[in-house]
Image 1 (cartoon, helix red, strand yellow):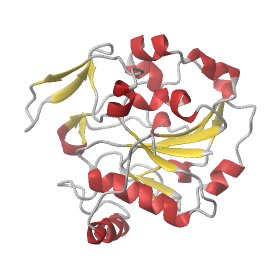
Image 2 (tube, one colour):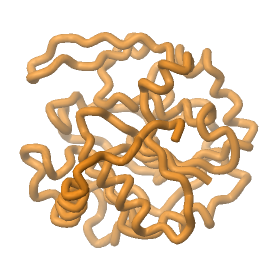
Image 3 (cartoon, one colour):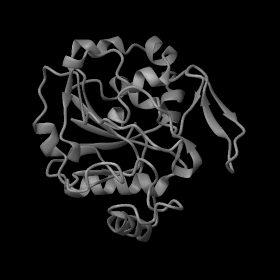
Image 4 (cartoon, one colour):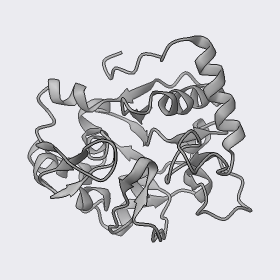
Length: 249
């Protein structure tokens, strides 16, 4: 088993909250690593061209040329290279803007090896055209399914993710798990990818996903569970450094 958290150098604190809150609740020593675009590029795996285009915001937009569309984080498409990192067993990926509130080992223990992927099957249709830090809110099939998922490296269906496929398929198709039939996708309880401000507030989250913006971003300071997030960030800041995020460690 392994856990991979998407890392974006613009969101050090968010990554630290995700990683340390995950480790804190675990009852088994599952490795928790950062998934870095730069590591995949340096290894010669990630070859998708990226351009930085002007925008109305303070900084340029990352543009994925293959998709002919913007990507809001550095790990937007990098997550699908997981089979070349984890290689065996079950691996979990989650976006860097999450906060764990319980023991993720419980989720691993409920996975069925007959499935290729497990995720929360959201029916999320964003009302806004922008999200965190003025990033474009992209709409696609199976929206937000890929923001937290478990992948079975032994499942034959996942062999479709070759390097050529990963580097030449539009991101919207990758995020929609285009290579999988519905029967290959197991369903997690919504508590494992509870969308702040979107999911049912009566549900007690195991993972809070600040999909529209983490609490440190302007306008999201009062998001659900923001006080917990700020507590984690404060604890990390007192430590004085970001934990190692390299996928090789």
